[in-house]
Amino acid sequence: MRVQAKARNLSISAQKLRLCTGGMRGLNANVALQQLSAQPKKGSAMVFDTVHSAMANAQHNHNLLPAQLVIEEIYVDGGAKLKRWRPRSR
View 1 (cartoon, rainbow, N blue to C red):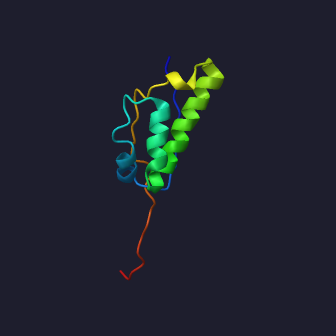
View 2: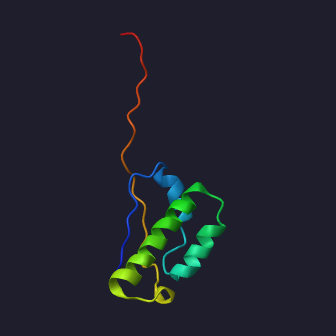
């Protein structure tokens, strides 16, 4: 059974988040949470919340045990860019 959780509109670049999600595929979800809590990065807290949310979804919606969950797929895509402009004469 596949369970998913999405985090949207995060105020951090995708490149920085990919550093936190690098070696997570195939790990047990609890081990992944331990690794994320040990990382001193801003993005690791955001990924921690998303993985924790996916675990809660699995437990609440599908009655799965959290100890048996494995991260099969995790990816980070680029989001919307902030529009910035510099006022100048023409």
